[in-house]
Length: 266
Ligand SMILES: [Zn+2]
Image (cartoon, rainbow, N blue to C red; front, side, top):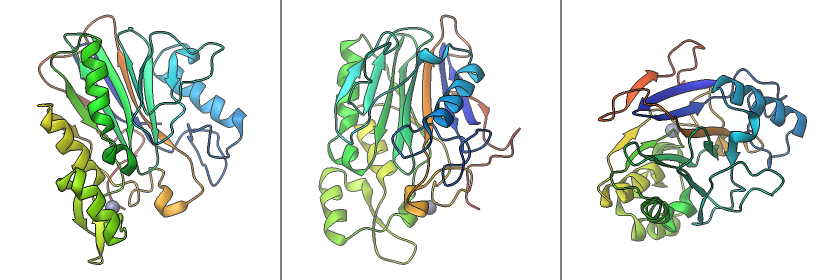
C-alpha cells in the first residue's frame, strides 16, 4: 500500500504501490484510478483504505480529473458534491487535506514550502513536461504564499524503457534538453523525470528523486508494460504540527520494508 514515505516540517509525502488492495486483475491490487475501467467499488474501497492508513476521512483524499494539460487549481476543501476539477496539478494551504497525483509511468511531483504552509501535487507526463506544468504549479504556489519550495519526484518510466520516435524526442528536447535520452536498445528515448527535474531546478527548487522505474518494478503500475492497468499515487499533506526537520526530507520508509515492496528493478 504505502511504498515510500518522507516528512519535512509539517509536510508528509507518500508513494503508494500496487499491493494490499481489493482490485482484481489487470488492476490488482491497490488501484486508485477511477478512470481506467476498474470496478468503482474496488477503487472506492482502496481509496478508503488509503485514507484510513494516512488517518484522514475519505473525502479529504483529493484527486483531480487528470487530462494531460498544464492547468493547476487551488483546492482548500473536499470536492463534496462537486465534480473533481479537470486539472493536472492541485495546490493547497489547508491542513489535513491529502492531494494526490495518479500515475502509471508519468511523473508524480510533490511540491512543498514547509515554512509557508503551501503544498502541491502534480501529474507530469510527457505532455505535462512539454507544456511545462511545473511552471504553472510554481506560479500557483507562489500566489498562495510559497517562497522556498522543495520537491519530491516519484517513480516513473525510466529513459531506458521509454522508446519514442526520433521526432518526439526532438520535440521534448526542444523544451527540456535534459529529457534527450537513448533507450536500452539504443533507440531514441525520453527521460521525462530528468526533464521535469531540470525544469524544477530552473526555479531553484531542490529535488529528491524516489528511485524506481515503473516499467521494471513489479510493485508499480506501468501503462507501457501492461496497457490496461491501475494507477498508483504520489500524495502530499500538510499537518497542523511539524512531524520532522524543516531543513531536509527525512525518509521514513524507503520501499524495502515492511511490505517488501522495493520500487527498484526486478
Ligand atoms: Zn526502466
